[in-house]
Image 1: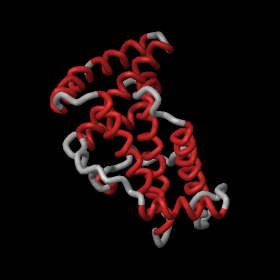
Image 2: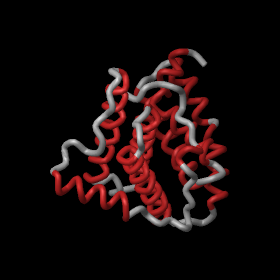
Image 3: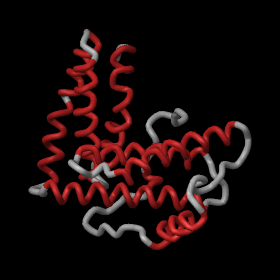
Image 4: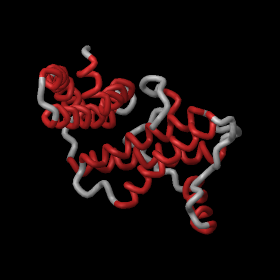
Length: 206
């Protein structure tokens, strides 16, 4: 693939990877990862016309067949139910990522990559009308902040600060209690362990 094509679809490449990783274990999430990647990728190509965009667009259009197969495999599921599945999956991943960072013995690059990936998942809520609430927007910013600060601290040889440094003490306590006791239960949408997924590439999160 030409460099121009790579740069055009770089923002959505991780979602195509997530889709393949979760296709068997969490098919609803896999479908929405690929759906978001194609929709966002085509929009990027439309905003950047030229030979590279045309080639990238052709590659993305090839994904439409796989999308239809994945949609058919999910069966007749209402849009509201899909929204429920995705939001609860994302909440569970967010809670697990936050809990791991607060309780793990030593914070490592894996924690940063988990926050980066969790932020990517939160973006999927944009697919559904009204799902990306101010609370989710704040969580996305938090994931971006944690991923960046963890990597920055590790590069300087120091252990990153745990939890949310901007939350008042009482709010921080409530967050910790929520992480400990309010993990969502999603029996109809089983969640594969986080360590079953590999972060696309081996790049530091921005």
